[in-house]
Image (tube, rainbow, N blue to C red):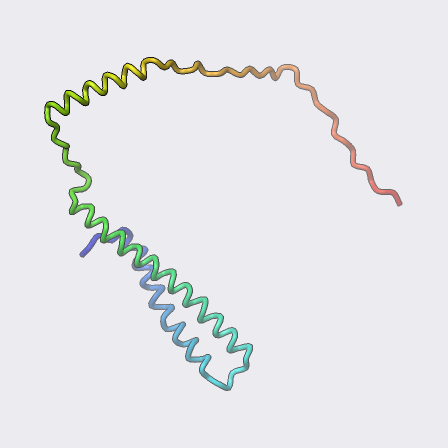
Amino acid sequence: MAFDPDPQLRAELDNAVNILLPQIAGLQHLVMVSSLPADLIAQLNSAATSRSHRLDLIQAVLQALDAVGFYYGVLIADGYPTLTPVPLLPAVSNELTAELAVLEAAVGVFRPDPPVEIGLDLSNLTTVPQAVPIKPGP
């Protein structure tokens, strides 16, 4: 079986699907009863629509779990987490070493700015009296 990123979540969602499907079918069947008042039919349609929306969201999450499992398997087949070292010809190695020396020399030109210090003196704090609200007149 393929990798499942969250079997507990999948089981919970599968259970929700098994609850929603008959509810949606039952609500849709009740709408077909012609003797029901229009307001009740509207409520039944609303309930069926909201449950169908929930079902769509659950199915989207289940598809996303399937995709994670599939691509994780592809990633493992690709050799994850190991990366194969890149073979380097001696001439290329020498060129890269020379480039590195040039870059290090260029970086050496810069000096970091010293950190800025901010002083704050809290020893002379004063309080400002609070304004008293004015009550409206008669």
